[in-house]
Length: 346
Image (cartoon, rainbow, N blue to C red; front, side, top):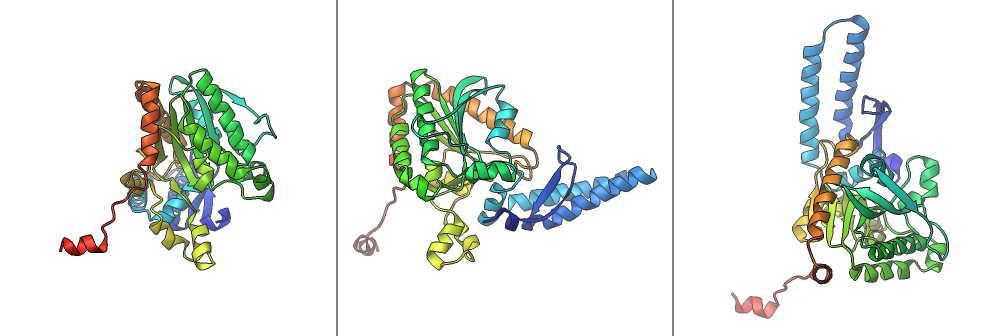
């Protein structure tokens, strides 16, 4: 879905950077409350009248409504939050939680894909190879990064860096945030499917710990191309699915009108995926989502990475590989009762 269709209103607000805050369709009441708070604060400053009691009540109402709204998000609303234009992206997290980062470029075959960022980093007090999708922040950067849709050279660059991690015995941390792999003719000509399939195979047997986290969107093979790991986690308001709700609606009904309904059926939210065993952990976000308090979200992410890497390093590498293999082989296994067996059971 286009970004403009997700954003219903916008206003100036004190959100930490003094910029424009965007409100999603279901956040309209929150926007009205924030506007009232801002107007009353401005009036208090101009007229030098004490409105602290009124402001305190408005802020209490705002917090209560914010908690009620985000505690009861539908799957489709969660998808919208994951796509929020102010949600922190890979480079934002690098700036907040990586005191050292040295980016590595190129796949040594075709070129450098800006949609996938790779590099040596210090994260959670440990040296790691950090790999992730980057969507871009402004229009120019988004076009350059293809909105986070990676090409084959991006996945080959990621694999090249994973092999470096294996050589120097560094853990790999991948941060997933993509609607999917780039579907263009050039990408297909250069082996899009092959590059993703090779990454799946190589990551399954990479002799170093791997940790994958879905930051926002985790779409199809574009996410899986860097998503085979010993531990797979999601930020609380991310989504992770074999297909986006819009694409699913387009295939089944030839339009996007059923995207909201299909989002529920796809079970793409973090809670559903944790219950199904597709992911291992859910990283909590601050009240109202990561876009409202990026630094707290970054802190939670850093703490989870540090803890998970310490746990993974306790395993012998052969045991780690066996557990990784069994983890993905056991997904999607269901028990079916045949009609005859069900009849015999009464």
